[in-house]
Length: 244
Length: 269
Image (tube, rainbow over all chains, first blue to last red; front, side, top):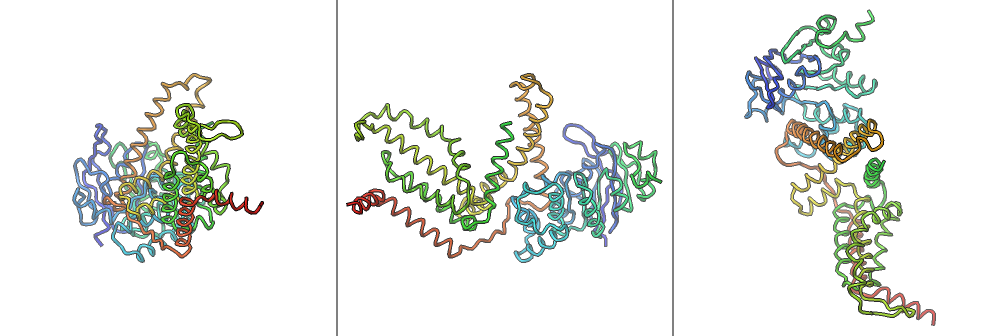
């Protein structure tokens, strides 16, 4: 199953204002892996995620998703495969009602009406949001917005899921159900977060980003218990590991 | 704080439109067409017409009652925009001084008649427009306009306006609150600070627009916003529209008030 592979090779990215956000990122994620991306504020996590589907293109180096190298031409194709859930659900939910929003992706994929309805129904069902379908997003609570944002991406049935700080602003119960949901998604996924307990819970592998490059890459249990490494990167031991 | 009050006011108009009444269930297209017809009929009256306009109040009153819309809320909104209409007509009594009637010894000038006519037309049209928004969800109105032939670019703009006006207002509210917490008396509340706040708001909005655009691209956006809104015109919708057209035609071409007056006189005799 080569089509769920994500590979970053010597990826550099510089913003137009001259900030070097990524300086030589290298990693390879194979099918079904679930990887946590951690690092200090401003270390380049979000920039990295935006490379996953061509919102940003590398200044140099290559990003390969499945068999396709990411270029201006292949972006459309890659966007069908990679679903990105952004940090702020208000940016993600741009349609006037929940139903319209979740249907947006499937409709753009050119599906017929019955198929779209089925997809929307299933996606909202997965995040327990079926009774929200006719509401406008500004009548939703923060947790509901996050759930709907996830549903709107799930409805496109992506091969790869990338989430940017998914548990921020969620109350503990919503966070729990998010974690439970993430565990059911069996395709490859990448989660950028400061919530190290969530990473420990959901991801078997963890990549630490510092100053735009990979500082450490290995099993979550090993990396997230390395106090010095974490503290060097403005992080700390996950709460669940602090007690022992 | 006035800003907060404004914010919650818009929110209230929006919440009203999600109620569950007969009027709310009518097809948005029918309501848009009915409202347009109503507006054109009211505007079509000559400038000295007053009496014939009065029966038209039946329309907003009916909608308000059936749609369970609080009267005071609509009246307050009408009052809020009334300065525009008043400004247009307030000089008429002085400019157009010909006497058209004498009631109880007081001569009535043509100008005051046309001023009154402007005020009536204004109240009727604004309340009709407000009631359309209060009884129809905004996306409903947008899709109705789309179905009636408005170019999809305009409709998308309207939909985004509706989606993000609340987000933008919340953002503005947070900024003003942050300022108020750290400014005391008039210090920090001056025009210079205000200009910078607007600047901040603008920059944040541009950033947000970019993020939204990325989110749209990520979900396959290619220039057109697709929609699955299938609305069928039901019998009640047609009945409503027919009733509306008849009602407007009768009120426009027959002098209903005169008729009622004659009838009353006949009964009294």
